[in-house]
Amino acid sequence: MRLFFTYIIRLFAKDLTFIAVSLASQYLRFLQQMAEAMNMDDVASDVGYDMNTDVLVARAHQLSKLEADALVQKTSANYNLHRKVGCVGQDSSKPFTSSASQQRYPGCGFVDAVHK
Image (cartoon, rainbow, N blue to C red; front, top):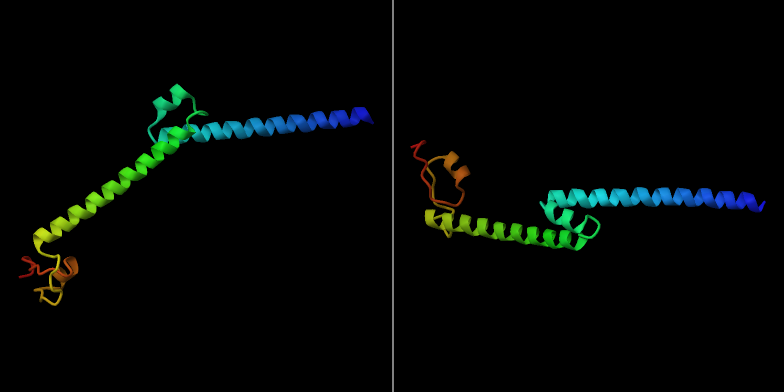
């Protein structure tokens, strides 16, 4: 009976080892794909894929900050262009010459030259 339990325990240990190795390989593959997606291949190969989780998190923070900065810059550029054209603060009750120009430039006093 003791031999039977020893055999069962060994089988169970082999299964657990196989599962652990499978999960570890999936995790390393995930880290490798993340490093490739964030253009961090050179750092990942130098440090090792299993050691660079902090580097990947720092890169994700950097990319999110860059994206937020780009959005702010785009918004301010659009605002400045609208201000130059004269749309900001315009009275929206100003008449338009055509419905097409009103749809394209709501709130602005544009006169659509094509529809004149």
